[in-house]
Image (tube, rainbow, N blue to C red; front, side, top):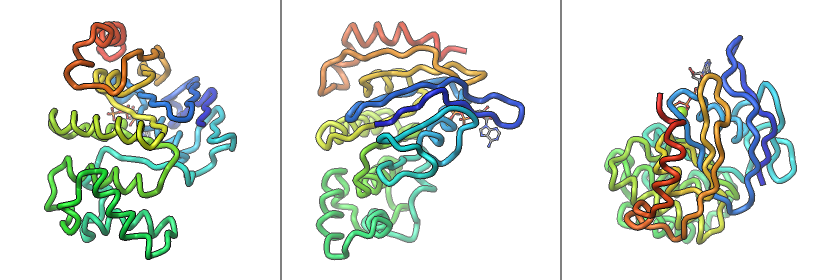
Length: 247
Ligand SMILES: Nc1ncnc2c1ncn2[C@@H]1O[C@H](COP(=O)(O)OP(=O)(O)OP(=O)(O)O)[C@@H](O)[C@H]1O
Ligand SMILES: [Mg+2]
């Protein structure tokens, strides 16, 4: 579905990312993990067509990516800035339907379905400032899902949430990916989150950003916050990949 070959980015004289190769298959959940500043956001922006690479090629469904693609949706870390403060929860989700030129009569059932899916139904008429961080991030995810994307690109979406909320949203994203057959590329600096979510973990090294190691994650699904994290294989993956995150 997504095919990156030899992607590289320079900012001025500085090489930020080099030789990035990745093929993502439909329905695959790929996590990209790496230390702060190694180029994860830069990479995700490339994959999303929001920035152009200095080198290499990128295609989505066999077509060269030269700008934002209709089949892609991006979830940003900073939900505070991603949502429109003057629109309600339902109004923020409607934004994606408006942009997608969905007929008006379909708005209500589609928004209701998304509110249900993201457990936001009681909050439809609230404004973002009236919601917790976790709920705001649910709204952003619901708005992305309203685009019915083939692929979700997520940049540290749970980075600023508390641990329990984070776990809940991890399970939510796993469920959506599985039930709706979505493909996900998920960027995080949290190794355990990457192993918990992914079918595959791509570990990046810094200066310049590059692939250090790629590991297939052989853990049963559905995953479980207690059992999966206690699985000896989970701990072995953690052990194996930890060195890439350490300074
Ligand atoms: N527009 C820019 N111009 C120049 N340098 C930049 C620009 N954007 C990012 N960089 C540099 O590129 C490197 C990678 O930044 P990036 O934001 O992609 O890292 P990251 O892995 O997402 O970090 P974090 O984990 O902190 O979010 C950093 O050293 C940063 O200073
Ligand atoms: Mg980043």
